[in-house]
Amino acid sequence: MATHKGGCHCGTVTFEVEAPEVIKASECNCSMCKACGFVHLIVEKDQFKLLSGEDAITTYTFNTETAKHTFCSHCGIKSFYVPRSHPNGVSVNVNCLDLSTVKGVDLSQFDGENWEKSVESFRNNLS
Image (tube, rainbow, N blue to C red; front, side):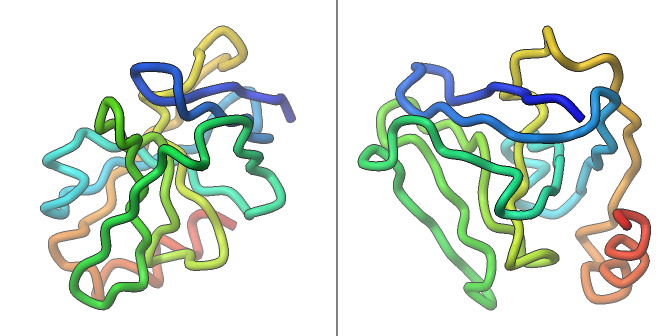
C-alpha cells in the first residue's frame, strides 16, 4: 500500500488516498463518467482523507440521488465522489492523482450505460 496524493486543477481541493502502488481502476461509459473523463479508483472511506478545500466543494446528484458527485467550486474538477455502486466508499479520479507514487494502473471497463446489469459483477471484481 502507498499514500497517493491528489486534488483538483486549481489545488483548492486536495486529498490523500491509501491504495496499492499498482492501482486497480475502471473506466465507465455512463453519461456522467464519459462526459468528465473520470477513471475510478474505489476505496473504503477510511482509506480517503480530505486535506483541504472542504468549503469549496459543491455536490450534484441526479437519478437515484445515491451518488454524491463532488466538484471544486473554483475550477469545476471532480477529483472524487461517493459512487452509487459503493455508497459507503469513495471513488477517486485516477486522472487527479500525483502519479509519482503510482507504479501502474490495471484498467478495466464498466458498462455504466447498463448499470443494473453490470454492477454486481463490478462489485465482485473489486474484492
